[in-house]
Length: 70
Image (spheres, helix red, strand yellow):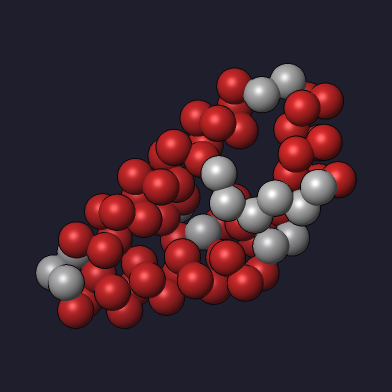
């Protein structure tokens, strides 16, 4: 699910979510799945980053500062 950008939509970041979704679907077809794999890796890295932050750090970084990527 991370490769589809669901976590971006949950945080309210529509543009990055759409970018991840389009690259995963359209790019995956054009590149025989390579783009989908890359988006999966990016989603996994972002998930690890999200889970290793304290709730205060997460809120300051992604809610208050509106940091959209990594």
